[in-house]
Image (spheres, rainbow, N blue to C red):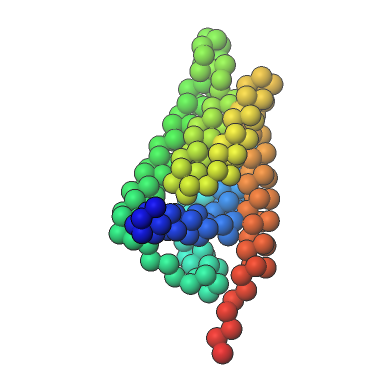
Length: 201
C-alpha cells in the first residue's frame, strides 16, 4: 500500500478505537430501558418515551470529552473524515427522530385497528423494536462498530417474540437495554482501567 492508504487505514483504526469507551453504549442502553419501562408500566405516556433520551443526548458529547480527552487526548481527524462524520451524525440524528416518531405513530395506528385484523395490528407489539433496531443498525454504520448490529439483532429477536406472544411492546426494549447497558458498563470499566489519566507533573 502507498503512504496515503497506510494513513487512511491508521485513521480508520483510530476512529474505531475512539468509540471504545462504552459511553455511547450506556446511553443507548439507558435510553432503551427508559423507553421500555414507560411502555411496560406507563403505556398511556408512551408518546413521551423519547423525552429523557433526548435530554440525555445533550450531555453525551460533553461527558465523552471529560472522560476520553484526559486519557487519550484530543484527536483532530482529517477533513474528509470530519465531513463524513458530520454528515453521518446528522443523518443518524434525523433518522433517529424519524424512526421514533414513525414507531409511535405506527403503534397507535396498530393499537386502534385491533378489530380489523390488518397486518399492522398483527405486528403492533414488535413495531417499536423493529424500528429501533433499524436505528441501532444506523448507529453501527456511523460508528463503524459491529456491536450495535448485535443490539439491533437483540431488538429484532425481542420484537419477533413480542409479536408471537402478543406481549407489551416495551419488553424488547427492556431486554436490549439491559444488554447494551451491561456491555457499555464493562467497556467503560475496562477503558478507565487501561487508560488512567496522565500525571500532569
